Amino acid sequence: MLEKISEGLKNPITKDDLYSSEIKISHLKKIDKVFNKGLEYYINPRPISENKDASIFFRKDKFNSDLNIGAKKIVNQFEDLKNSLTAISKLSDIQFERKIPIFSIKDSPRKVAQEIRDLLYPNEFSPILRDFLKELISKFAENNIMVFEFVETWNKKDTANINGFYLNPNVIVLKRQQKSFRREIFTLIHELGHYLLNEEEIEEVDVKSISQKDLSKIENWCNEFSYFFLVGNYANTIEGLNKVDSSNDYHFDFIQRISKETNLSTLALYTRLLYSKKISYKDYNNVKNELEELYRKKIEEENKKKELDKISGIKKGGSVPKPINSPLFVNTLQTALYGGVINEYDFCKKLNIKPEKIDKYI
Image (tube, rainbow, N blue to C red; front, side, top):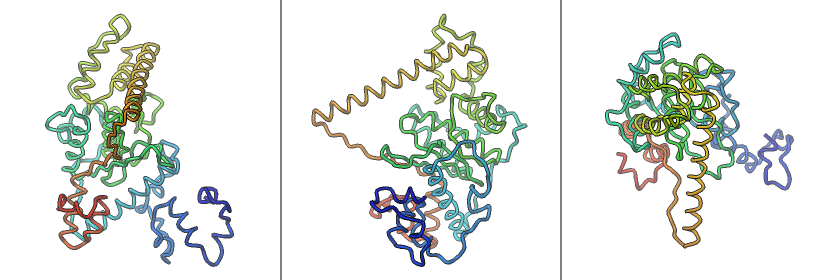
C-alpha cells in the first residue's frame, strides 16, 4: 500500500506518516485514489462493517480468478452501489422479488436453458450486437435482475482482469467489450447461470473453455447453460454435423452463418465442436490461429486507417463508450426521486449524467 500511494512522490510516504497522531489530507487523498470511498468514509468514527451482507469478499474465501487491484476496485464500486440501491428501494417501498426459481447443478443445463430462454430471450433477434445486448438487459430487468456495465479506457492505470460477476441477490456486472460484444453477451448469460444457481462468483469467463473438463462443476454448468441458451434450435444442427476438417473447409461459412444467427462467437462454436469430438485438437488449433490472425489484421487495418485520417487532418470524434443502463436501475432511481428519497443531484450522480440532461430520464 505504501508503495502504491507513494508513486510519483519524491519523498515516499512512510508507515510513521500514516500512524502518527494526525494524518495529512494529501496522504488521505492518495489512499482514497485506491479505494474511491470519499474522504468522509475514513473520518467516520463508526467501526467498519464486516458482516457477510457488506461485501462478497466477506462471503467468499476463494474466487475462480486471481483478482488484481483493478478488479477489486470494480467489485467494491458495484457492491457499494448495490447496497445503496437496497437502502433506496426499502425507503421507496420497492420490492425486487425473485421471479425465477433457483436451480441446481443436478438439473440439465440444456433443459434449464430452454426454459429460461422462453422468459429472457429477446422477442426480436437484432443483428446489431449492442442492440441485442441491450434487449437482453431489458428482458432481465422485467424479471428483477439488474445488469450493469463498467467501461475501462485504454489509458486506465489499474485495469480489471475480470469479465463479469454475479452479486447476490439480483445484480450482474459486465465489462464492456467494445470490440467483442459476442464475448460480453456470452459472459452475461454465463453470469445468469450463476444467478440461477444462486452461486456468487467473480471471474474472467473464457469462451475457449466451454464445457472443458478442467473446470469446476459450477463453471462447467454455467458454460453449458450459456451455450444452449444462445444457440437455441441450432444445437441439433451443430450436433448433426459430420466430421469437421480441411476436406470440408471446416464448414467455415456454415459456422459463421450460425454465429450471426445466434450471436455466439465463431470460436465458441468451434470450441463446442472440439468438445463434442467433431473436430480434432490439431484442426481446432489451426482454425483458432486463423481466426486470431483475421482479428489481428482487422485491428491492424483499423489502426492504419486512424493514422491515415490523422495525417490527412480528418478529425473523428472518439468518445468513451457509455454503459447500457438497466431499465430496472433507472426506474428505481426515478421512483426514489419522485418519492423524495433522493434529490436531483444524487439522481444525476448515480446515472452519471449532466444535470441539464435530467429531463430525458424523468
